[in-house]
Image 1 (tube, rainbow, N blue to C red):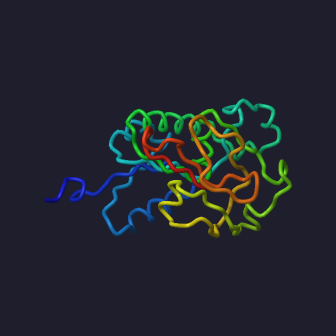
Image 2 (cartoon, one colour):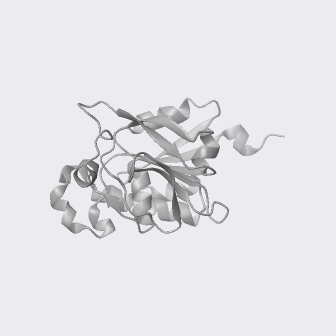
Amino acid sequence: MKTSASINGITVGVTDCARYTNYERWFLDAPVKVNVIRLSYSLNNVDDVEKCQGVVLSGGEDVDPRRYKRPDLLDRLELADIDEKRDRFEWEVIALALTLKLPMLGICRGMQLFNVYQGGTLIFDIPTVTNINGHAKVQGIDQRHDIHVVENTLLNQITGCVKGAVNSSHHQCVETLGKNLLVAARAEEPIVEAMQYQNVDEYPFYLGVQ
């Protein structure tokens, strides 16, 4: 007997970004029916999270460093790459999704924002802080590097891998982990490439990937 979900598909909320249509297409091209809701401050539709069976926190602008108590970094970041309205809106999206115990996937900025929501901090610019290159785009082209996946994590269970190569287009990353989170994958130290909740039985599904 088919359930209503199998007949009508699942509904996923995706936070708005410059490449929103890419995210939407990935879901619409899935082998099962997926309905996609654009979650955006321009639509003022945070309540639409209640219509979703899962939420994707998409990539995009830098998280405002004032959210992780580093206002001194504002002068060292491109202000055009910070969107306070988006931060505020997606903060509410996370809060509601957690209240509803919805599964969440954080991608790039989405992973970083969730870490900050949980009380963590960010490395504001990887090359400046660590002298490590090879993670941000070069002339508009994604880079590629290896990552090591921690065994028995969600990412390990989903991919079956303990090592792999990934595309890369980020200049920031997680610094200190937020409350109840653990590292699921790393590139070279100290670059965190994926994270999840420590106790997956106690919390709803959450996976963050760079």
